Structures are given as structure tokens and as C-alpha cells.
Image 1 (tube, rainbow, N blue to C red):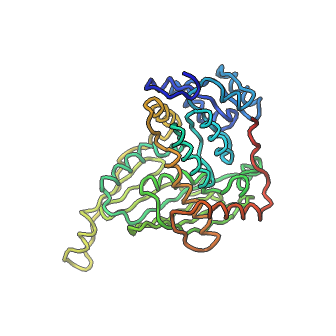
Image 2 (cartoon, rainbow, N blue to C red):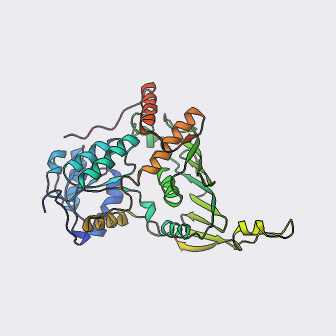
Length: 384
């Protein structure tokens, strides 16, 4: 099969990929084990620092390309992009131009305008871009989505998300594009908290309004290290979200409450709690003023499992083999980024921001923040 040729259904292990930014930590720590586990074939690797690409290639017997153009000319079906996310839009577009499918680390881009442009390019190319938002594949998230869709919670009225990603200052200082408006386009929400926001909107859908307070408490960065966000849906549901890299909290969790039951996602799995009938019926029933509405004890429904890069590769390879869609397409990855962009706007304006958000409005906001900020530097552009 020539590079980018229309794939015929085949064994997903037959997928052949080239890798951009093979020297990155995320590729070596998460992608390499996934590639080895799924049998995906690496036909070439490239990194802006050639010695790093050579090191990982030597370990696995992979070919090293000296330039990005050389890499994209290799006989492959797809490209894996692990470069810093400010470079994603440019690199993904080049891969699509080379008629390749693309698997790219999150976030797809910081700007909605870039995501929209890539989505249009995907539709024009007939190929797919999959974004690594692997938490959607956790067994407990899959089960929670099924239960909500089946109406087991009744009418959802509230969600609570709490997550911490404590970091040393060196995490930002040693990679100085992080935490800057020019280099990263956001802070803890876009970098770490995107997974938590993505799971929430994957379960409940995109909200209709965002109100946020973003602030920098500890870290030596321009963007936020702590975020408190209120999300609202037109059906009446609300969610409160607290995410920080400036403290350690007692475990990350997402709790969703409905008129008929509740669920809780944590690092341990999915816990559920049922009401004795729907609360709306209880409220409308005659009885004593102080009668209790009975609920069950929490019980473990699904232990934690999955959500690995290997599952992402398997999903991507199967989509390629069947000429279908991966779980998290470019379009599907947009919602979480839109919520985060709206949170940045809301915090600056001290006002609620309605969705959908105009991409040009956020571009203007981000351009203004960049112009007003000294910044440090952006990631080096990938050589041609």
C-alpha cells in the first residue's frame, strides 16, 4: 500500500505508522508500550532533536528520518504526532496533506479556529484524525455513559468534578513554553484538566454556559494553576469543577447526581447509588413533611480498568481497518477545548460566557493576552 492510499479492511495490527516527536517523554512512556502491545508497525520516526530519535529507534530497530518531509514520504498508513500541542495544528495538517490518517496527543489545539480548520481538512481528505483522550475508554467511564444514556439516574441535576495535578515549579521552568499564553495557550485546564472536562462533556454533553474564576496561586506561570468553573445546561443541570496544579487533593473524582440515582467515578472505579423511586415522584406524593427519601448505600459497579494508550491504538487501528471513525475524532475533541476557552474568557471578563463560542472571539482574546505578555518562548518549530 502506498503512503496514504485508501485502506482496505484488514487486521488492525497491519497498520503502519510514522512517528513525529519520537524523542518526547510521552511517546516513550506511553506510546511505545502501546505500539508493542497492539502490533502496530513503525516504519519511521523523526524528532527535532535527532539524537533523541536515534536513541529510541536503535532500541526497537526503527528507521530514522532526517527531515519531516523524508518521514512523510515513507510508505505508511498513518502518522503519530507527539510534539508539543502548540505545533499540533501545523503538523496534523501536513500529515493530512500527505494523505495519512493521524493519531495526535491531546489537546488537538488551543484555538477553536485551528480545530475547526482541521475538522474541515479531515472531511475534505476522507481520512481521520484521532485525539488521545484515553479516559473515555476507562471501563468505569464506558459504564457510566451507558447508565446515564439508559436513564438510570433520572433527570441529572448536578455534577461535581475535583482533580489535582501537583507539580514542582521545575515542570514549568525546565520547559518554559508551558504555562505561557504564547507557548501553551492555557494553563492547568488545557494541560491536565482537559481529561476531566472531556469525561464530563462526554457523559453529559456540552454545557450551554460557563462561569469561571481562574487564578495563579503557586506556580511561576502566566496562565492559571487553579480553576473553579461553573457549567450550566439549559435543562437545569449544573456542574462545579475544581482543578489545580498548586495543591494535592484527596483523589480525583467526578460525581453526577440525578433524580433517580447517583454515580461516582474515581481512580478505584465506578460507584453507584440508587434512590427509592424517582425523587420527582416522591416530592409529588402526599405524606409527612419530614418523611425521608430513601437511597441505597454506595456500591461498586465497575472496578477501575482500561483507559490505556494501547486501547487508543486498538480503537484507531480498527477505525482505519474498517474505514470508520475513531472514538475521539477532531470534532469530538472540540467540546472540552471550547469549555476551557470559555472559562478563560469568563474569568477575564468576570461574566458568564454562553456557548457555542465564536472561534474568532477567542482568537482575539488569546492574541491580546499574548501581546500583553512577555512570554518566554514557544516550542521550536519542527524542521522541514
